Image 1 (tube, rainbow, N blue to C red):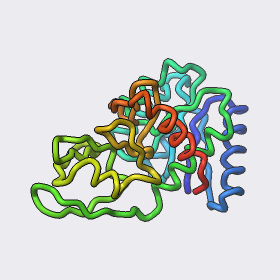
Image 2 (image 1 turned 90 degrees about the vertical axis):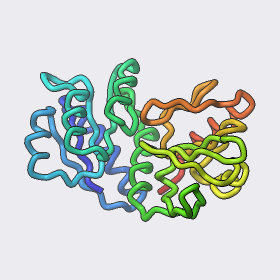
Image 3 (image 1 turned 180 degrees about the horizontal axis):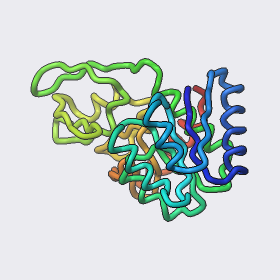
Image 4 (image 1 turned 45 degrees about the horizontal axis):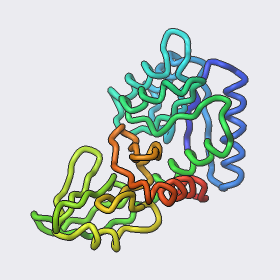
Length: 235
């Protein structure tokens, strides 16, 4: 896995690089890390080499902030995972605008970073697909493409990143097919893919792009434990 660390503080670059190396040693994943001390230096190098699996961006950098750099990246690449590193939690809302993978608050905790690295590594594996019946016929879709599902009478709506599909089955039938692993029931009418969950709150689940899915108060503990457990598992 190739990772770019864009951070203007030398001590933070050393810390993040050390954590990434520990993760690589534990998981036996061959990992190469490139370090950049400014957004400008990253953009200059990225023009010639865009083969990265993850970019870790400090938000508070010189003239070109991590947010501005992420916007420039998204103009050319809509899928490259971006992980923000910041000293201030209020910056989280900006992550939704550029579809950031997540954000970590300084001082960065090793286990939180490991969880994010696991997440990126999992996404690089061959994707398991499921066969589903829609109004237009049978379709094969990767589990990772599914963000959440919503009951719609005797049918259900399968919500993807940009589109949605109407399935000719109940939410209960879909639950039996998907539940377990990366999927969890968060409401009697909703299933959610933990792979795309950014935060679990008391009354809703927040997805990576800012969308919110209702969370039953009776299921809060179960969903929260599943969310934490999903990012603690080994790749």
